Amino acid sequence: MTAIRLIGRNVSRHKYKSILHILIGVLIVLILDIYAGNMDRTGKELARLPERIPVFARISSLNGSMRECLTIREDRVMGVRESEYVKDPVFTVRLKFGFGSFTPEEYRENLVHYGRGMNGVAEILGLEREKITFLEGVDESVLETAQKVCLMEESLLEERGLQLGDKVMLTTYYYRCALEGSEVFIEPLVTDTYKIVGSIKTGDYQGEWMPPEVVLPLDCVREAYHSQGIEFFADSGSFVVEDPFQLNALKAQMYDEVKFLPVFTRAQYRYDGNALTIMDEAFIRAAETLMRNLAILKGMLPFVVAIIVFIGYLCSYLSLQGRQEEYALMRSIGTGRGRSFLLLLGETVVLAAFACVIGSIGAAAFFGTEAGVLVLSGALFFLTFLSGTAAALFSLHRLSVMQVLTKSV
Amino acid sequence: MEKMIEAVNVSYIYQTKYQKTKALSEVSCSFERGKVYAITGKSGSGKSTFLSLLAGLDVPTEGTLSIEGQDIRKMDRDAYRLNRASVIYQAFHLFPLLTVMENVMFPMELQHVARKEAKVRAQEYLRQVDLPETLYKKMPGMISGGEQQRVAIARAMAAGGEILLADEPTGNLDSQNEQVIVDLLCKLAHEKNYAVIVVTHNEAVAAAADVVYGMKDGELSVVRE
Image (cartoon, chains in turn blue, yellow):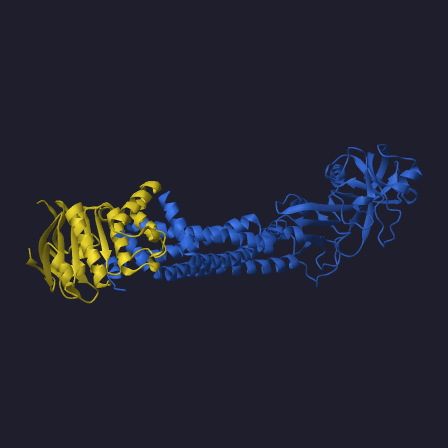
């Protein structure tokens, strides 16, 4: 209690020194808040970067010219789908459909509808998410299953007098591309019954590519391939990189384990979907800039700390130069070294606390600094400034009390 | 009478990186309660060094300095200065930002005496040194040198000790104030049973002392007993 009273009295009586001390402290706190705020913002921006600039990857032909109508081997499809570095992989397979059952000879009249198997709503022109209406209780995730269900174009439903929930028999043909050359064959796959669980509204689509009239879940199609003993191929594939900060691990896995190749523009034209393009340039550029900024800011930390310690030392040292006599007198009256040290340090603690509060309020008001940053920079200021003060106070210990007090006026 | 302070072959060497200076050389003497001691000598003779040893601000390099039989090296010297020995100086050395009253209350605050009681006692000590009540709330800079030295004596009394060490207490005072301070020091020794040890150049102060020691080149000798 006595110590608190003595500290309070000293702080108020040395008012000009105290005000100066507080002002210097407020300035340091403000600068620290700006510094720590910048560091925090840069760190958060970096953490949010994968969200802001997602890294997409797309499978293409080796020369990079084709991204659809490819022949992507099943082991590559599964390699991508099972990778822990991959998010939202979407693969499609082109199909042709006809209603009911018919023989290969009857295909000309019956095999008139274009469709796709897919495990998610792919970026297919004319097939945007908002154009699909699902049966109640069903959503997009149905495409990730192997259920015998389908989505069907609205006009086709109307034409056939069908509605959501109805079952329909479809005969499916698949595309087989020659790995070399440009021949494409359409061959029978399976005839089966599917429940219609969604409708697609593509009526207003004016694009060049024909959107699918029928969509089946990819794994349902894949099982059909397997049941017929046909080797499965996807025709397009893309995914989002789960954690773009692990691009190297992803690339190592994709190129070494899944056996993709980087795009080689001078390669021959082929259907083989064996190349992987990872669109990471924008992300890497932004991440590198942010990381460089963060590294610079972090690199400055020891200097910032040293400067504050030095300012704390200098402030206290200069302030104590005028108070040597007071210190010597306190010692002469019987205040121990430790107690004198704590009393003088206590004054700085009070002043630093004032500076911290005022500086933090200022930083919050003018720069909108977050509470966490304020606490962190306040703590940093407190520790470093008081370290400087402590160093200055230790220098007082060398003072000869008698020498100071026996100087005549 | 019982020896309050006893110095036996006390030597003190100031040691710097480059040289050693012997400030005190085998000083032996003793001090009793109820007496005023004067230590005279030229500047640099070692008087103030001896006083700082007596105040427990330092310890002898050689020899023994004991307070009521207890070696000063083994004592809590901060507690000794707080409770038993007070020092007054030529330059008065009051806390410049504390009022006269607060200056006198300061040692009692360190001793954790209740504020109210400390105030009553401080007023009593200030009355005993004949300081007008109108000055109690003034800052030291606003009162005369003689008044400041009286406040310093009141502060020494407030510590409640039995040893008063004074370093040239009248050095900055005119003859009228000098006499007041000398009278006060004598009163403390003879009426309050303090051991008063005064380091001085002033012959009038030395004349008022019961025992006079002379200090020359760090060696102490009895001048008058």
